[in-house]
Amino acid sequence: MRSKRTNILQFIILFTGLVYISAGLIFYIHPIGAIQAFAMNISENWFDLVKDHELVGPMYYFFRAFSALLFTAGCAMILPLFDPLRYRGMIYYIGLLFPMMASVVLVKNAVLLVLKYHLDRAIVGGNAHLGGSVLIVIAASVFLFITIATSAGLLLTRKNARDGVE
Image 1: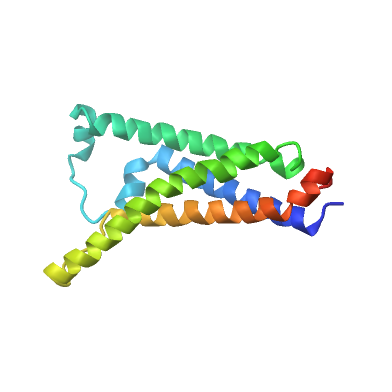
Image 2 (image 1 turned 90 degrees about the horizontal axis):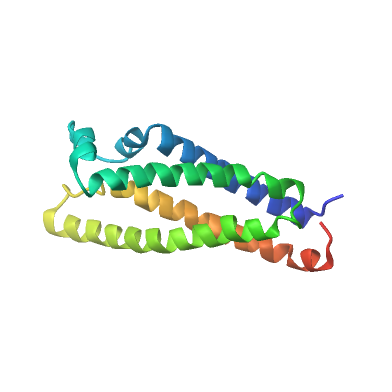
């Protein structure tokens, strides 16, 4: 029988896996549509820019490759649900280290974007908008939440893991 603490960790793992799978699928299948949901103005010839531009093209395909990795990592998060002790290292890497590193980059940029938004709004007036930056703010929040939740779950089960008890 598993302890309540292990069940909490497993819920966090399940949530993390579902977030990774859904984000990975959405961004892999239709990345432009996902970005359009958050952006105010995307040019109609944007896809032509992806094909021809030497910076935007590789970024687009790296974005899709990253989403494939995110989907795969989400699928891999199923393994710790069956044996949390054996796959504890996977929890540390995919559930803690990856979102922590991603949230550092994204939170830094999100804070800068929000500060710029408020500065522009103060200067320009009510016409300033976050635009596509909303996606960065949301992703930063999600990765930061996953980092904090996984840290809490790992700390809750640390003593049990040391004793070899689930």
